[in-house]
Each structure stands twice: as C-alpha cells, then as structure tokens.
Image (cartoon, rainbow, N blue to C red):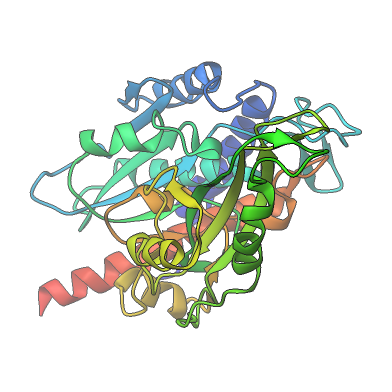
Length: 372
C-alpha cells in the first residue's frame, strides 16, 4: 500500500477527533437496551451534519456510501449503541465523559462505543470515494446487549446483499474469527406435592439432581481449536413451592450452553435430551456459533498487517448474521460491564487507522486481481 499523503493524514486526524467527540456525546446520553432513542437521534444528527443520507428503523441507524452501486458486493460495518445498566460499583458518574490520563471514562465507552465511533469514522473515510470495489454499509444498531428482536435483526432484511461484515466489539484490535453460540435451556422435572413431615409426594428437586450432575460432568466429544469445548453451566434453580413443609411438585433449572462451531444447536439438544430425564426446552435457536474462514480476503489482509486471530467465548450480533463476519474492535472485552468502564483514546485513534488499513489492503488486492 502506498504511503499516506499529508491530506490523508489530516483527514484521519480530523476523523479521530470527531469520533472521540461523538463518543463523549453518546456517553452523556443514557441508552439502555430498548431505550436508545436519544443516542439514535445523536448518531443521526452527526451523519446529517456531514451530509450523509441515512435510514432509521426504530432505534437503528443505517447508511450507504455516496457512490453505492447495486452491481457491486457490499461490506457491512456494524456496532451497537445500547448499553447495560451501570454496575453498582461505579465510583464515577457513568454518564459523565471524563478524560483522565488518556482514558475516556463512561458507560458504554468500551462496550461498544469506541468500536461504534471508530467504524463511523471509517465509513466517513470511504463515504465519498469513487470506484471502490465494494459498497460500504454502516449500521449503528440497538438491543445488542439483550439480543433483542428490534436490533440488527430487523435491519438486515432491509440492506443490500452483504458479502461480509465487520462487527465492532472490543477485541484489542485482534481478529475474533469464530464465536461461541448461546443456547439457553429451561429444564423442568415434575413430581407430586406432599407434606414434608410424612412420606408423601415425589420431590421434584430430588428428581432433577441427577440431571444437574450430568450437566456438570458431561463432556462433548468435539473440541474446537478456536473455541474449545462446548460448555454447560446450570445458572438458576427454583421450585414451585416457597413453603418449608411442602415437597415441591416441580423444579426448574436454567442452563447456559456455549456451543462451539463444530456442533449445530440441534445436535447439542439431541444429545442433552437423550441423557437427562427432565423436560428440556430451548428459549431460542437464534444465537448460533459462527466462524469466518482463514483464507477469506479480509482475514488474509489482517494477517498481512500482523494481526493475530482467536475464537471468542462471548456472543454478539455476529451470531445473527447469515454471511461471514469478523468481530474486531478497539478496547478490551475484560472491561465490558465493569464499574468505571473506560477506553484509552489512543485505542480509538489506532483502531480507526487499523480498520482503514485492513479494508484498503483488501480493496487493493481485489482491484489488482481484477486487472489480471
């Protein structure tokens, strides 16, 4: 890739400043999942001020590059602007975008505001460029933190055909090429109520104990090089009875299952249902495991830039996308949902540069191939 010109450097520096200013303004606006209307408006105003046409679908904002060409494939740039509620351990005001010692503090700064504003900056960098080999589609989505149905899921059918995407989540700008799927199960054992002082009833809690033990100890055969083993955790247990002297007639577990890319949800469910006696019901089959091939041009570009790759144990909107996606962004996943959340300003600045280099390297390669 050719050396950047002074004009390009100045353009990127301006985009970096604008991205950080935008993030500060977003931090100052509460945007819990399903309550993102005001941050959606802020993002819309930011784009309007730069003469970028956009569409709004509920609390999702999306836009196409200026020279969009329906005959060309499209790449999606996506991150979310909703947040969880602030951790009770906050010492700082979660809605005050405080900058100290190179850190920008505030709720959503790291997850995933830094990623979002960086991708918006990258979209603006390419927005008016003619003759790109790909269209660039930007989506600032809602409800990611709750895997809601009114987030990216309602936007995808409205978009042009997407060839591949980048999902902005804090990964220290390393490439998360695979992601575990999330399968949440309700597991119910049924017994018969009776008085605890007499030999009456059938205790549903006791009936479910062997199933708890099975969830704890069972090991699935297929272990992924990227994502490791399928992991099952019993996270909730409750009975239908709150009285000390009554044997419960039903007992319910909630089981969190993190599925690697080597199993389909249907395969995992079949194995579970064959091994436990309780009734097993999945809450959803939406959040499936995903991966992007190592030989994909985007991944090859990242590797050429010296980027490493790994499998992510956390789940994101990547799971809802029916095309290859790379999860990658500034910030550190370990800071997400923590008290006094922050992101380093230089992480945003470097993230913008890296995203641009990643796409430019791939675009240049594609254009060189087209000339042969």
